[in-house]
Length: 157
Image (cartoon, rainbow, N blue to C red; front, side):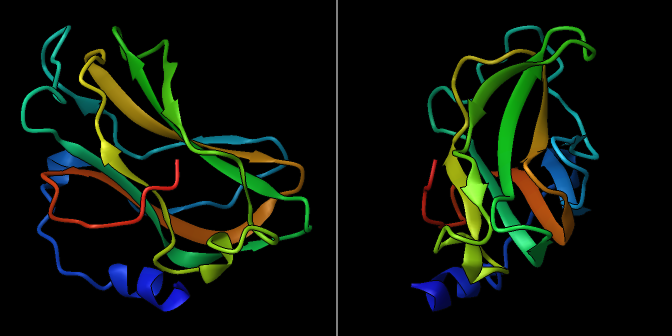
């Protein structure tokens, strides 16, 4: 299965840069630190319902393997939304992946944190939060983006 996950990272997919939360963004951070995607997506209206009908998909995966300082280090990715682009709330999240113990997480590059339909109900602004618990993550990068379903991954939420 690890080979399958690694191969998924090599799939050619055209991604609109305006639909991209993060492109090879660092996962590194301190203990219990939060880090937010470099891009905040603006749907342009207060109640866009982007996931209704033919769903828009949300993918987030590793583009470079993570290095942790401890076997207890965990990382979690959270899709957040906001009405005003300043106060964000949790919309959906992954489990807290133990980067040493969770078998899929050890697959490294190409490991998919999530590849799921965007919730139909969300607010105008969207971002990804990366949260570390226990010990700092020293290295690793991730990518997160919206797509039309052409990126086929393994849902692990």
